[in-house]
Image (cartoon, rainbow, N blue to C red; front, top):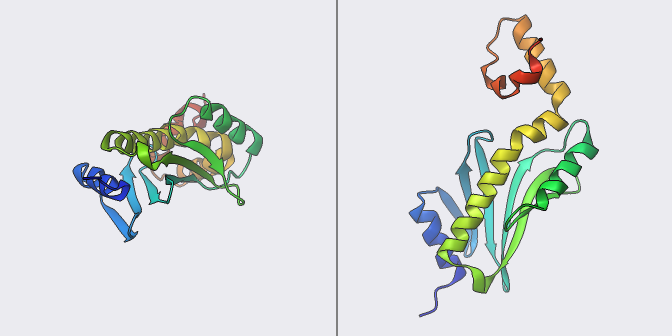
Length: 162
């Protein structure tokens, strides 16, 4: 009996206890829990020839666009299954396509792991490169008002005065 790619994806999402929706047959959306980027929503769409994997990572950078996009392209050289992409607005995504014949439980698990790892491990660097001025303003505003800066702890190294 041949198992469809949609059945395999459904099985992996269920076995990993990931909450997901299937908006129509073969079109899945699931939230992957992270540490730096608290949640990455990934979509898996079964097509006629391949499964498309897509995840939003960050909105378009406020500044330093060339450095952000260069960093992403350099990361692409070391990645598995998905690559960073930029849409017409400059928003950053992970995108990939896998042939239907390659869709196995192990491969779906690897793809989900890759999306989670790349989105989560790159998130703070993207913020540092593309949103440093906004982060600095937020930090200064919080310090001036005696507010907690706990949610900015990841950036302490370059935010706090030496």
